[in-house]
Amino acid sequence: MKENKQCPLCNSEFNIEDKSNVIKTLAYSILLLFKKMQDREDSVDNLLPCCPRCGGWMIPGIHRNALSRSLPLMICPICGVDEAVRVYSGNILPFDSWWAVREILNEIETTKKECDN
Image (cartoon, rainbow, N blue to C red):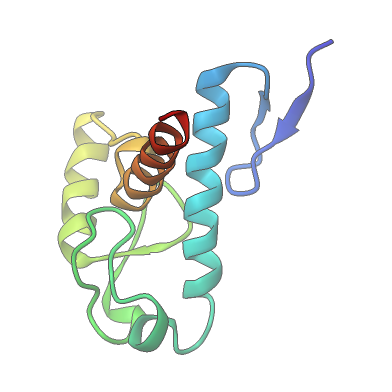
């Protein structure tokens, strides 16, 4: 029996038995954590100095940054421009290519390799 879950960010349903959907869900979950931190009043100044999309520095004061067109979270102004161009051209950057997701997936892979040795 296939078990469907609902994404906390985009509300779409997906099958958790499909490996690509599991990675997509993990990516969404990672970015949802960034969203929760950004919702705090002092997040960019104290908790979240980096852009979840590129890893670059965010501008102090969350409203000086860009709202992602893909997810309801803030990204740096440079990524905001890049995302606008990508949306216009139809070449949207997949979530598993975002810095925050890549870093955590790489850490999981490294830990897995260390445990296998």
